[in-house]
Length: 68
Image 1 (cartoon, rainbow, N blue to C red):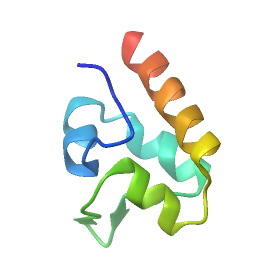
Image 2 (image 1 turned 180 degrees about the horizontal axis):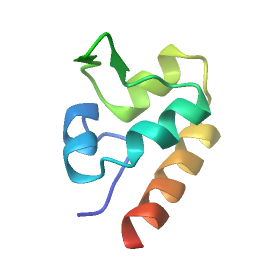
Image 3 (image 1 turned 30 degrees about the vertical axis):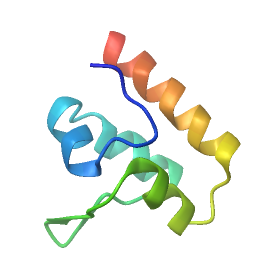
């Protein structure tokens, strides 16, 4: 599955568990107190003040991780 900016965080974590650590390093915590953040990758990034070019980089890098 190809990751895009509209992927739901819950689905992203299910298909690519490594995304939790990646997003944490980038400043997007997708798990808080054991509860996942709901919404898309784009929504989560924008909520943290990231711009479109940042989201595009996240998508590219997450797809690169998924290919490994």
